Image (cartoon, rainbow, N blue to C red):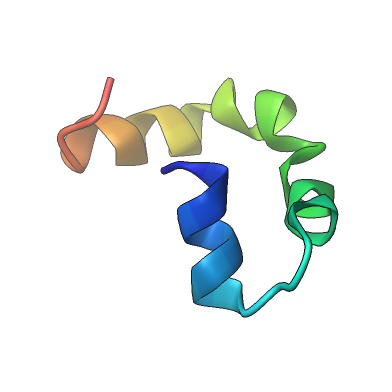
Length: 44
């Protein structure tokens, strides 16, 4: 999902605030549970 969309959904005035939530994302993306959820949700 594009950062701007997430920013709008969360009501953040600045994208810098929203980016704080994506710092650990690379670690989470490789976790088996997240990979399985992506596959079940139609992602890759």
